[in-house]
Length: 291
Image 1 (cartoon, rainbow, N blue to C red):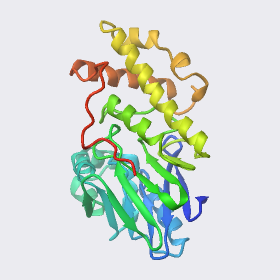
Image 2 (image 1 turned 45 degrees about the vertical axis):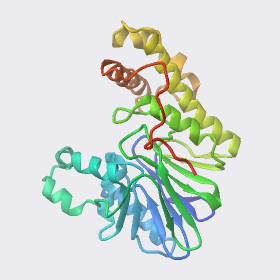
Image 3 (image 1 turned 180 degrees about the vertical axis):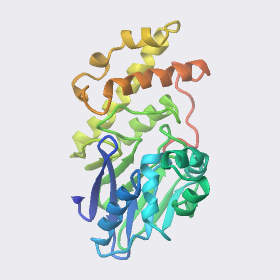
């Protein structure tokens, strides 16, 4: 079941941690954003596209994680849009996904929506009287982007921007993700569609939601940097869920406490490879280039 979040922009719920995918409607076509974790979720999204009077012929990926890609099996023959890095990431995970689906990599590859329109950093699409901007939003996963609809002041955050779970950067970098979020907070956005969690309406509320995520990353990073000799249990004990998240996210949903612990695990991994430093690194070309 879909609902209209802004004029001509529809959101479909998915089953992974209050997930969100969507449809952006123009006069000529409709662009689906992400696909859900399986064929059932993908079919619900495809049906939402048909409900707008268009065929499910266009699907954009914000990044290459399983809960945003596997539903593409319900979009046979469509145009699949992603960055080159995200496309490579999808291929790298195919064997693991095949095990999850209890099938062979060859069978899954024959049904999966591999990217057919590949870009490097930024891309504009015209769906008919409406421009859709896909732009680099680094830090969560390889080749991650956000999807911006300027005329509706709406942003699909993918998993770069989440409101219902803590941010995740195992396949990315915490410092880069924090910088991305702070840049996104400066956009003139009235409707935020996160990859996971409730929608946010209103410029002030959107900015606050994005900065809350950035501040969480910053506080976790500061704690790990300040305690260079602590192991995981000590870090978690010194930065408990109640202090770092508190009332922002209810602890009894979506394994929230475990997700907070994963933040510490991922920061420890960054520390081990020398990537966790107090000083901000120079901005690279692959970091966010917000419109």
